[in-house]
Image 1 (cartoon, each protein chain N blue to C red):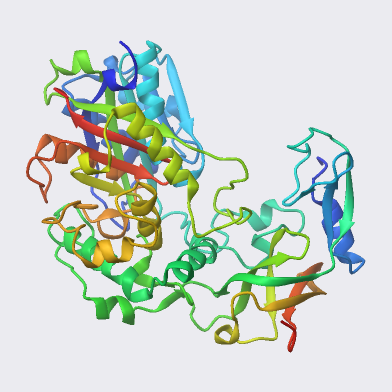
Image 2: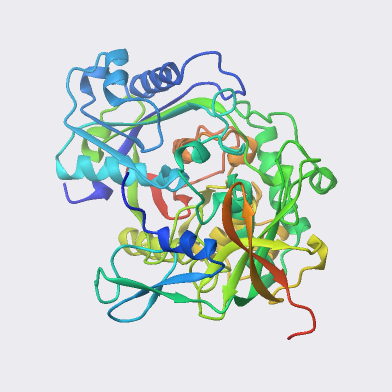
Length: 126
Length: 385
């Protein structure tokens, strides 16, 4: 099996850490990851642990398109403090209670047998 | 021969558009191709190039075996799903302009409703293909509607675009389809209330009627030199410009990783090239065909093309500019929402009909037609331009 470029992310998730791929030469973060740094062309990578804090950029309700009573799952774009945007799920909130730029924090949960980052809205912090 | 503007579309062909064709995708491709070749007054032996999408399931050699084409000297396939729709024209015209081929057949055919439904979760078999989680699908982004809705929300919020605004586009598209006998929704216009009352596909962005159809059907186009076009059965429609623009940091579908998702830079930079190559500008365009997988993309495209200012597409549409009697009749066949979703290539055929003067909803004196698919586009005009 070929080596995938995102192994670090899921290994980090299993340890409860939100890891971003950063270039070993110039330090820039690449997300989604690529094997060559587009800025300095280095092929050496390290990881940087994200704080897990960020804000909501956009969100939708993910249901089966032709089964309206199927379970709801909120998918969101999260802007991390590190200046990186990631796709994740927003948990513990109602669809109509979400505001743009709402502050969020990461937690990890096993979904379909894999540890995955999830986010929840942080109350009382602006 | 100098370039793309020395090439022309000389034939168009299509099958009926349905929800259940009852035959193979290859048969649809063959029927549409033969119709296009015959429309040009050519025979299959004259075809020496083929262009389609990377996603098309019909193998070039299989299509040759159907049509009886003896030899091909050019094949090319456009990537990025629907973004390939208009790119096919650049690929075909570039081949003719360079001398690599004399007559190129563009085709796109599928059973996208009765066969594998791309709009349904995991129709692409992603889950089976993946050994573990990924950055998108695993979180629930499993249909194009969800993937794009997440993206359109920023545009709608930034410019105060409401669902009713989206509905005003859909009403016009369905109005155009209602008087196009080839359209699936022929004779079936809708009201804004119908749009608002249609069920959510992706709350809080897309209702059912904001979504393109899932269709079965095939379309084909024959491209050759403008010189040769003069002697063709139905003349030619000149390709005044055809180009693509793909930018650093972009992604297909999951295009979330750029700074401001409310702007669609590729449409703007692609269109700038069209203006530069054709010597035309937005006010020279008489009719436009804009690829719409979902209604919001029309708004982004109208602005990206420069037909109106940023954030003003909702006013442009509300003021009637895109209707048949407006300043820029748009998707006069009904678009992919109203006519059929043949992956956007049916939009090129409607552009050709407008210039030929044979469209069901013909716009008087249509000379310059812009056909676009977000990242790719073309300007068509009469042979004598």
